[in-house]
Image (cartoon, rainbow, N blue to C red):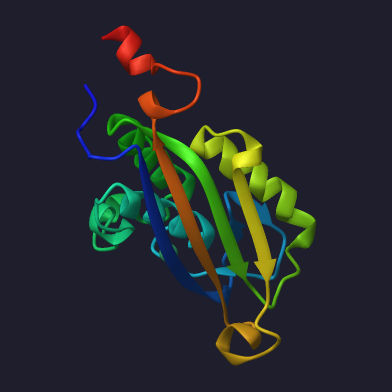
Length: 179
Ligand SMILES: [Zn+2]
């Protein structure tokens, strides 16, 4: 029942940027991070989850996050980005794929994210239904250069490799064994 996509592996990439503002909770990688400002967005502004979800959609050849969850749609106002990821993961599975690996980079001058890196990695792996060792989240700053360097926002970049479930090591998929 899997959609024919022509190859056992697919790659996708994406970038996302949100401004930091007072009076918003800061959520990155689905993890609440204590800070006096948070990311501005129609949803919770989780730039890391947005980049990851958009990269998965790209790998599937299904456009980008804005196409699936337009900011003009009131249903998505204030939504937790983990719910958007859930829906993208559903599409990924429906297309017959699972995560091969994810490599993501968060670009932030403030706040210091290193204490939350492991939690973000674990949360993202759980959201994607993938073993933790397939998810890598890197942290960097811009060395005080530009808008991000002035602490005006946070960016995230993601690259994903998806593998067809029936081509993956370990053999036949659940979908197939039920078919
Ligand atoms: Zn975004």
